[in-house]
Amino acid sequence: MPTNLSQPPTFCVDTIRSQFPILSQKIHGYPLVYLDTAATSHKPACVIQAITQFYSYEYATVNRGVYTLCQKATLKYCEIRKRVAEFIGAYSSDEIIFTRGATDGINLVATSFIPTFLKQGDEVIIFSSEHHSNIVPWQMAVQHFGIKLRVVDVLENGDIELGAFEAALGPRTKLVSFAHVSNVTGAIHPAKKIIELCKSRGIYTLIDGAQSVGHMPVSVKNLGCDFFVFSSHKIYGATGLGVLFGRKSLLEQMLPHQGGGDMIENVSYEKTSYSAVPRKFEAGTPMIAQVIALGAAINFLEGIGLGVIQNYESNLTHYLAAQLLKIPGLKLLSNPKKRAPIISFSIEGMHSLDIATLLDLKGIAIRSGHLCAQPYLENVGEGFVMRVSLGVYNTISEIDFLIETILSLIGS
Image (cartoon, rainbow, N blue to C red):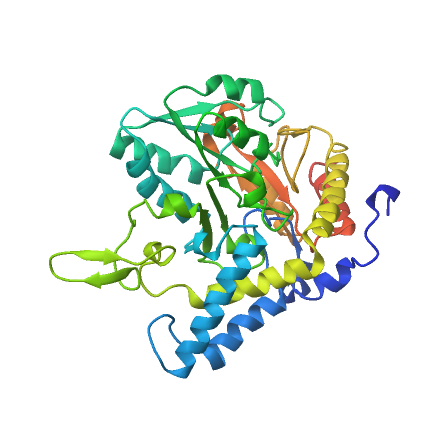
């Protein structure tokens, strides 16, 4: 192993891999090489067991009954909300809203925050490399509420130029929504500096943390943002669950985006009063098992250490980039100064779908297509690309096998 890929003495990737049952299988006769964690991560045994244990022996609804199972489930559910608040450095568990995913969290803000705090003609700013989930909800808000959406281009290497961003901020800019880490370029954006520029002008901020949480330490208190979203399934937890952090003072003024059970205080045929936050934004029976699984996923991550994970994945990503550049005709989509474990690329004369299909025949799973960033790829002259994204379970040998396989496919 190259000397620049040193690991902390307590980190053993083989031990970590042994906790993921799915990695023991073969695809088309080859060991699974999973390189698509940015899309969704696999689940360690502790997460799978937490779900099985809950459904087998502990299952009940929450917040609605006095019987023993309900009380125990409610207590665990509330404890995990507190764990999530601690995990991302929130001020209070009251600021943690469970959603269906990061996408759902952004939509909640678009449909509830916008009509409360913005007026017709006010402006929301995003960057050109955003995921569709941070584009479409604001376009819908344009149609519904008469706001304006402004897009600020990122640099050719995928980074944000703070001077150009600051120049784009105007008197009617009220909200800036951006990815902490781009899912297409891998760029780690200077979130704290962006937020400081916004705060000095009274502009609210939302961070899409789908690609940062689980790969690096995150503290919303330290960042100073007003909203922050992420998805459970991208940090080794279950699907169908996300988290929205929102400043309590803002959440208290926002109207609920859905109505139903559990988000009410009192209901009559004439009117309804709503529960306090966060339950005001959690209509219906919540994703209880998924929340239980998220608690197990957080325990898994903190058992390794987010700093340790960031260091390991950073070294792995540098190695991947260096090896990819050895492939003839390969072009990296971007080269940001600070990169998360995400690298997108194209190969001259080869369609991304063809490469991805042929790699699958060797047991290698990568993403291909427009990566839910269609406007950005069209903007940089790329219709479809390939993306390799790493997780804590990936290894040098898997990267080497990827490179060898691509070389054989292109005849080099």
